[in-house]
Amino acid sequence: MKNFCRVFLFVALAFPLLLNAEEYVAIYDEAKIPAYELPDPLVFENGERVVSAADWAKRRAELMELFETHVYGKTVLGRPDEMRFETTKEPVPFLDGKATLSEIRIHFTDGEGPFLDLLLIKPKEIPEGGVPTFVALNFRGNHSIHPSTEISLSKSWVTENSKDRKLGVVLENRATEKARGFRGSRWPVEKIIDGGAALATFYYGDIDPDFHDEFQNGIHQLTGVPSADEWGSIGTWAWAASRVRDFLEEDADIDQNRVAVFGHSRLGKTALWAGAQDERFSLVISNNSGCGGAALSRRRIGERVSRINTSFPHWFCRNFREYNEEEAELPVDQHMLITLIAPRMVYVASAVGDTWADPKGEFLSAKHAGPVYELLGKSGVGVESQPDVHEPVGGTVRYHVRAGEHDVTDYDWEQYLKAIHDIPVKK
Ligand code: GCU
Image (cartoon, rainbow, N blue to C red; front, side, top):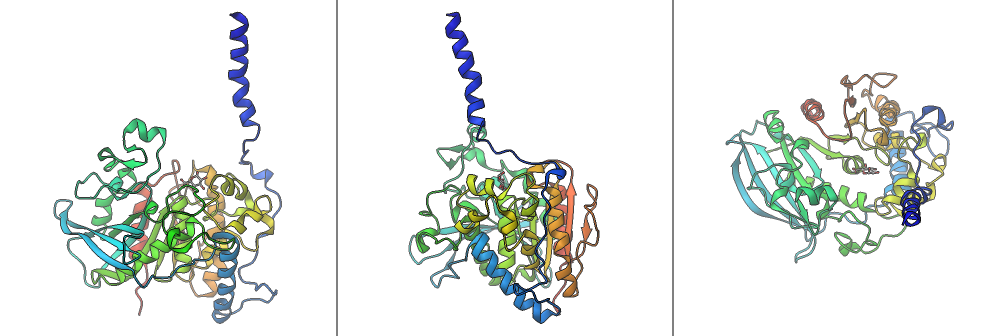
């Protein structure tokens, strides 16, 4: 018995160690970052300098193609001819009558096909010129943002982890009634309405469920398996944000000059890529987007390209894997993604405790996008080094780092509300 116990103890202790042998070891020590040189957004691939706005338009096209080919993949679908909007819930009073809530199903085919369910919450009183609006991707279904039973419970596939099972919010990858509002802390809907903005949110899994199935489900049913330089899931989610933007174009209540795209984490990466491609987003908000989002890949702090491509092989295009241990070979880095948004507003936000996403790397991207903004007569972050906690900086390119962990908090939303009202009115 004694021996059995010994063997048992040995196996119990050694097994996790053996498993860990292959485990990814993240670097958090700045001193361990190898020397790197960032590619210059203001130098063409042939070495010539960009000196005017006209030059920039050409350089921007060059950079767009590089991101499409090497990072996110080409967006292989436009606005489908068959796309149609079905109002599935006519506006009803919401938040004690100070808002209205409606639901729209955006169909991408004229049959059953893939669709997304949009939840639209607007202030009851629409100001002249329309209401500024956040197009926001959510992780867990529209019902997860607020407990109201007016919001339809998503029937789509949702992630299920042990925490969800304990809470009873997901059962066999479907949301339960208990899931209503369970992510409410990230969605201060009343604050958004009181702050004079509308919220247009949708569940990203409606477009492409977030697991790797070799691109069979979701919108891939319409486009087939992507080739090495064609979109991964991030590309599909970004595409969906543009289809929501199409819908909003037809709504007279929306201030068409002030529509932002917002996302957190993997959806922050998505927001940046959506905003880079679709110039109808006049403010692009990246909340804690990290690797493959705002963080500079060449710093290799926290999550690296190799790790993200291994854990999430479906997010980026296959070509991105070529850079797994070779960040320095990338023809771009993530500051250039931000330059694609210029001269429009962009907000990069970090959290001190979110070291996996490399808060300093997120700041540096925002900072190094500055020269392009300046060339176009706009302002960058306006500071040399990362500001202190809760000290937002910048003009057209904004940045803050808040206390706390990887999350979305009221503090973040307060800054985004200020930003959306600061979007310059087009003359
Ligand atoms: C993981 C992943 C990140 C991602 C995050 C999220 O942590 O490594 O890249 O941003 O999930 O989306 O929550």
